[in-house]
Amino acid sequence: MSTHDQNDEGRRRFLKLAAGGVAAAGVLGTLPRAARAQDLPHVSLSDPTAQALKYTEDASKAQGKKAPGDACFNCNFYQGKAGAAWGPCQLFPGKAVAAKGWCVSHATMI
Image 1 (cartoon, rainbow, N blue to C red):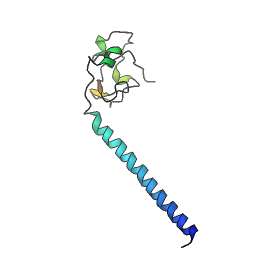
Image 2: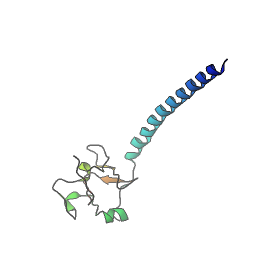
Image 3: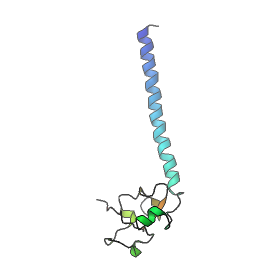
């Protein structure tokens, strides 16, 4: 086998492994997140971040400048599924917020 043939075979092997790794990472990267979302602990109202952001589980009782209709479910930071009562929020990593909740960092979806 010539050096050229060995290089070609090495490249093919690398590309196969790389493609397999990318596919596996894509599958494994999405499965745990989907399984985890429903199991996240709810943000406690006594959590320091929740207090700093004036988070409340009921937007109708929110303190701060809130536009009518603002709630976690229609915020850019909210990552929960439509219709879910609780979901992940980028502002509270590893925790779930109430879909009907609100905080001062609310950013309306465009």
